[in-house]
Length: 296
Image (cartoon, rainbow, N blue to C red):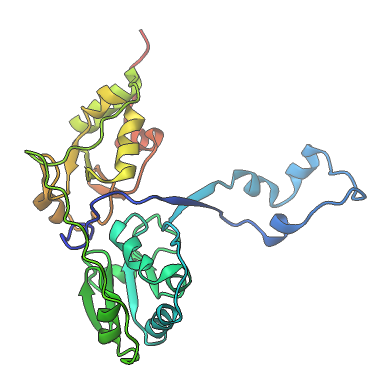
């Protein structure tokens, strides 16, 4: 879904992380213990409490939110956003999508918070990937207005016309975007990895390649760069990397489009199954059945 030409961001947007503690109780998060409160029971007694073992095993699930929009909204921008929400329109996007951020920025900070936004990327906060798939969303941003799907970023006058918003309102004409820089011969290459590889990361990268795993990414994808940095410079060259951006060096965009499971970058295909998002080394080793070589 991240592969349509009109929806692929040229540069990576900033990302914010949101850590959500699963199954945490509201009381545990809000109760403050006063000085006059009794001392806590010893750890051995706490461990005997029915919920203690489960609470101790809880782990923080890291979810991703779109970057915040800055700038004051006008009443008309807020009115259009509220109209879109009231009329049942949907704005489909992904937290990592640069054009989605530009689309939200057209409404200002206040208006962007009132948009009927649907997060399509797995790993995004309150993601509804199933709805996006059911609506056949093939690129971000996409708009569903009046039962019809419109792909790509839309100007405020376009959204006004498509949704039937008050025609008396006149939004300023948008400034034309600067032309994208021409790609160098062969296409854009991902940023160089600066971290140092270890014997473990080199062996893991070679194992992933030999086992038939595939690492789908794009040269502009920040988390793809972070994924490669986990391995270090030498090991990153051994990864089974597939460039999905049409203007990327050695692009295999057709191959990426042929894999409908690839809806965001990075994505991994390991053992015939697809995994979306940035994966730690330990998880890649576990999923691929990697056994580190014995120390000499």
